[in-house]
Image (cartoon, rainbow, N blue to C red; front, side, top):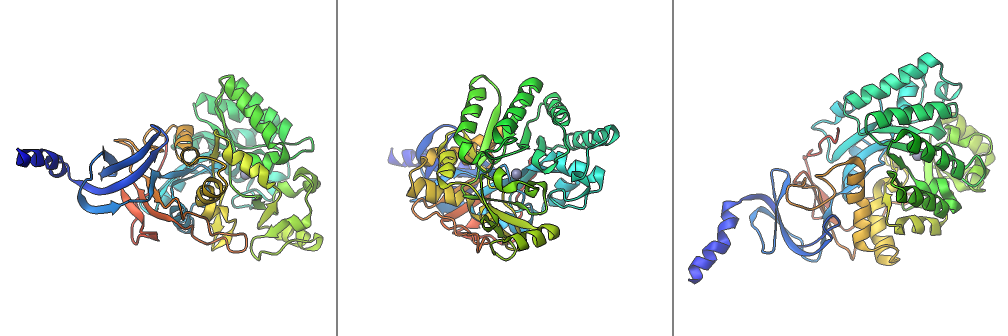
Length: 464
Ligand SMILES: [Zn+2]
């Protein structure tokens, strides 16, 4: 009798060999709200079993005392290089997407990363890069000369829309827009791009025309995109609401909650830092930037290459040269407000270039878990996980990511809730987060016992 029972219990273990199992997992799944101990079997890059009893395989992770969550999905990751992917993986991110600026041409961008990426990657078809190509602007990520010097002719606009459309045909995840970086992009042009998105049933991801308290500022900028989304029917995602809204962030969130309550598909995101970062040569720093940033001065700007605070003299010199600058403009209570709001997704907006940049590229996700969940109790652990995995997966319509369920992609982040914390700072941005113990991308370990795994490139394209 006992032998038969043992055989029955053991049979599924041998009948269903797994590639890898995670035993004794404190699983937290925001899709089902499951919050309890389970044992997870992974096979063929997918979650194959979620069991009440321990499982067996060649690779066994004992997750006792650790939280097992869906891998984090960063909707706003400008850093799309092996260097950036390493920092993302160590921060628990399994999918990094360039949705704000977007890319153009799209097919070539995906091809470059195929089989060579530590984590999953994807992008929108970008208005900015399309316009830069048509205008032969010399900027890299952002325009810096020809695309910001004049308006587009009718023929140039046609070429821009053609390029955006081609990108969608090549699998881009939506349309990326940075209206603030294109001072001559008219309201009519913006609406036409929204119409294009609506016709293709893809969202637009928008850095709005203006931010801050001085009109034209964040309120009228938000009204512009809400009106365009309403009139066109396009789904709308507004990037980094805190750096745009500043002290009016609560009002902005009330407006977004209001349109959502009326059935519109409008979402937003924030990063957990009190400073933004962008290119000093961009249109953001044209005349009047101090007022538009809520009343800051030269000393609130920090040159990323050296860490120095700027003066009127160094501002003028570096603006000609171009390069990343941190803008210390966001009050801490505004960061906390956005991170604790249940509908505001977490997204980094990060990029590291040979170790230089903003700490958000390396620390965003561990910072939310350590600082805002554990230390400040600003948000529950389940809600934080939801804002970092399920909500972004839903935004892009990925039914196989952002959840731990049978059949889902085995993108899984396992962390120590008592130790997880960011280590990256404005002075030293290239510091790995701590307490992220294991990260699986499509079933392959990319972080193992807190260290990067060697010689693995399991990242896959996320595309339409
Ligand atoms: Zn932006």
